[in-house]
Image 1 (cartoon, rainbow, N blue to C red):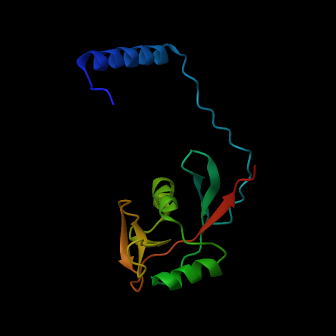
Image 2: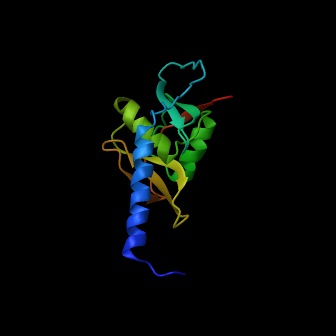
Length: 156
């Protein structure tokens, strides 16, 4: 490998500056999002939370906050079972953030279980406080708030 010199660095810097200038001269290409027409039927008491996106920004599904609520707070596995029994699922952490953003007025301002187990200890699961949107892990034996969601998947 040849030694690094000031002259070589300055040449590379000039080359990089020219590439940056050339890039800035290009017209900006708009990012196009196309949403397929989708009809979402809301049952009485349900609320549309919005589209859920993957890492690339593509819509994977639409989220609906279901109307049913359990009679009391539940431990995590009981919450998972309850949500399945009413025809829904516990939301994942991303979906909880969407619920907080778009359905906060329809949520009790306490922490609620997500469907996600805490990565570092399987005896814990993630939750979301719907009073401030923060997410924490709690032991699965603790009793917390529960909401169920429906996922309406997008077909290409």
